[in-house]
Length: 203
Ligand code: ADP
Ligand code: TYD
Image 1 (cartoon, rainbow, N blue to C red):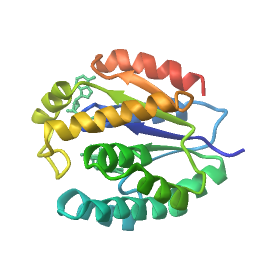
Image 2: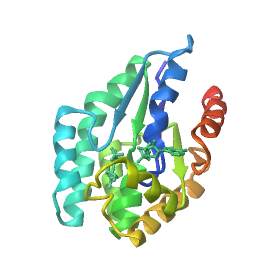
Image 3: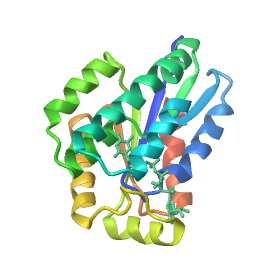
Image 4: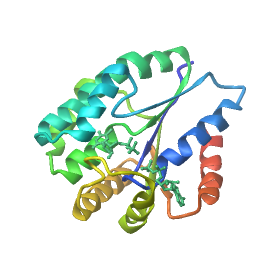
């Protein structure tokens, strides 16, 4: 049986990376499913990780940025995601295509139609079975990041950029309620785990 594909999304500092290993560990306790693979975008393959370094640290035209995100994704799907799902393994990815719509589309203003064309080409119908959107106001996200790490190219973006990014995530979640679960990520880590436990136990 084909595995399931779960993605974690949200603006920087929402707290999604904090929960990925925990969700993976809960799923690994289950006897009824295959192995659980955790991965991330941009990245997830040796080539993708090289592209990640360029994407997170070099300035470039917004279309170049979108094309490189999808180039890394093409490799990730071919090398990691599809083989794992075909083996019956489950895949959990820290970000996927919703991030491109939110950051390059919402944040930078690239036309959605361009991104949809790339999505059709690169994914050929592949979509996550479940997307967990960690949603927080910008103040919460930036306060969390301030103490946590030095900002990369995206994390150094303006407040307006992240307002647009967050709004685009929420718009997409409202459009695809069957695939998305929106998590109120202002809650404590413990409260979020209780919510995640319920969602994951229904898969
Ligand atoms: P993201 O992956 O969404 O960018 P992280 O998971 O790296 O965010 O979290 C950013 C920072 O916020 C980390 O220092 C983390 O410990 C902290 N954090 C995450 N979730 C919460 C939470 N629910 N409450 C308080 N702090 C949190
Ligand atoms: P992330 O792994 O969340 O960063 P960190 O390890 O610092 O938590 O994501 C890297 C950055 O890339 C993040 O700021 C969002 C951005 N990004 C895009 O702009 N478009 C995309 O398609 C993806 C996958 C990520």
